[in-house]
Amino acid sequence: MHGDGSLIPTGHTHRQHLQTYKAQTRAAGLGQAHGLRRAYAQWRYKVLTRWACPAAGGPSAEQMNVTDRHFDEMARMQVSNELGHSRIDVTDTYLGRRWANGHFRKIVA
Image (cartoon, rainbow, N blue to C red; front, side, top):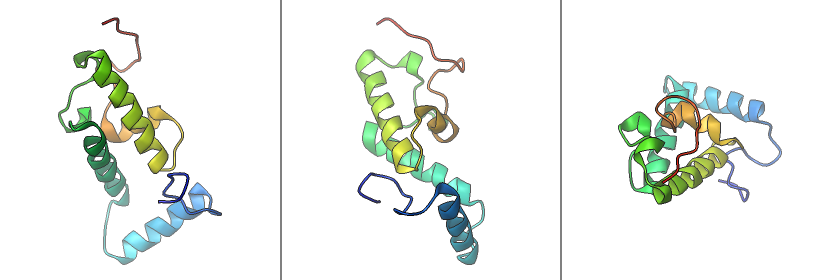
């Protein structure tokens, strides 16, 4: 990981790094390289929150209290940054939707 928390090396674009990543995983005999990103994202989320993400059977935002929703959001942003993204909604692909019904809404606790 680089100083800014991104997995993309300084001086490389996302596209350049993705091509290098795909070539290296193919050369190592690893198929479905995107699955490795999902596995990393789910593992990292669990490390940060201490519970599984929705895609791995963990709670959705509706099932969390206010404090847990805060930790969920912080963990998703951290995972997003570590994967080279800057938007929390990108993590829905790897971690499962934050909201079971598929759209964000404010819940008053």
